Length: 90
Image 1 (cartoon, helix red, strand yellow):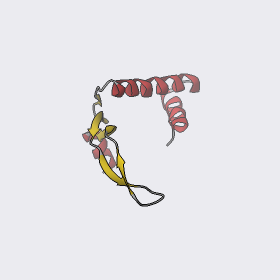
Image 2 (cartoon, helix red, strand yellow):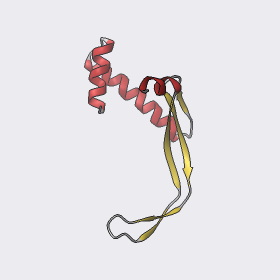
Image 3 (cartoon, rainbow, N blue to C red):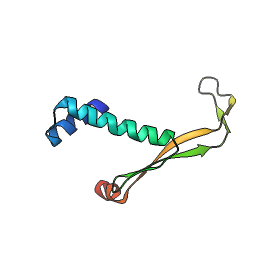
């Protein structure tokens, strides 16, 4: 499901106009994005937790040449599924 399909589903299941559903989805995603940029954790009980972790610098391989390259340290987003979501999938 892509963002457009998510907006359509929210509009249909929530009884919203597509324009209002798009605003709601965009604001939710922007809020999660901003919280992660600030280093905050976002926890949606039953769904999951979004967090940011630091990744150490490491050696990797170039996809084009196959030679080793140094990959810089950086921050990466992490999602951990909640218990309710895990149970729903199994």
